[in-house]
Each structure stands twice: as structure tokens, then as C-alpha cells.
Amino acid sequence: ETAKKVSSLQRKDDLPFKDVEAAYLGFLDGRTLALSEAELEAAEAQLEAALEAQQQATARYEEAWARSGLDQAAMEETEKAEFNLSMEEAEHFDAEHSHDKFESHGTKNAGALPDKVVSRDRWLAARNSEERAREAQKKQREVGRSNARDAKQEAA
Image 1: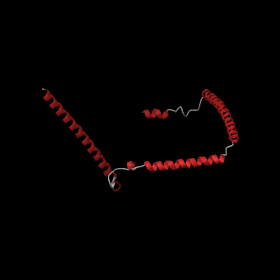
Image 2 (image 1 turned 135 degrees about the vertical axis):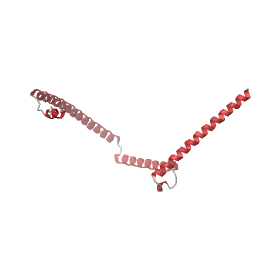
Image 3 (image 1 turned 180 degrees about the vertical axis):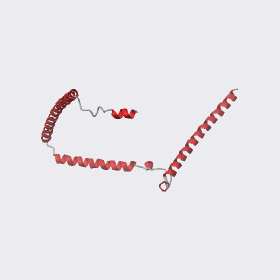
Image 4 (image 1 turned 45 degrees about the vertical axis):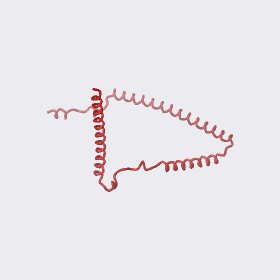
């Protein structure tokens, strides 16, 4: 019954715009177009100002470089040599300080075992270490209790 009612309805999306709606949407489009054009003009003005500032800075830099009397090619060669030296130092430092501490200390032949077996072995090892830690804490508590008990009996 509701399906019959719904099938006879006409969707509002399918209806054409009324004249008033079309005029309002046109007004909105025109307004946003005008705002967009104003923003574009402002951005273009900023771009032109930035390009002009960049050209002036480049000209000042070239003038200063020419007045300094330094040879640009020699400076570039010096910078390249310093960079190569720093790269060699970095490689030397890396070779000195890259010890075995970054290597895995997993089980031997782990690559030949399935991932599931390796994961299980790691889990068991972690579980055993946790159990050892719990046992050590339990022993410490027992020793502390016995010392407290002995001190209490001596005091009495």
C-alpha cells in the first residue's frame, strides 16, 4: 500500500526551477563570480609584487657578489670539496659506530622456520622471563616477611 503511494510521488529534484529560484541562484552565481574575480586580481597583484621583489633581490645579490671580487667558480669548488669531506666523515662515523647492537638476537635458523613457530618461540621466551620476574618478586616478599617476623620476635 505504501509502495503505491510512493510510486505516485514526484521527486522535487526532478522538477525544473521556478523563475524566482532561478533568479536567486543566478544572483548567487554572479555574486560568487564577482568575489572570485576580485580575489584573483588581488592574488595577481601580490604575485607581481613578489616577482618584482625577487628581481630586485637578485640584482642586489649579483652587484654585491661582483663588488666582493670573489671567484664564483672557486667558491663552488670549495663548497663541493667541503661537502665531499663531510660525507666521508659521516661514512667513517657510521662505520665506527654501527656495531652489532642493531643485529637481531633471535633464535638461530629462524629464517628456515615458519613465522608461526618463530612467533610462538618469542612468546614463550617472553612468558618465561615474566614468570622469572614474578618468582623473584615473590622471593623478595617472602624474605622481607621473614626478616620482619624475626625482628619482631627479637624485639619481644
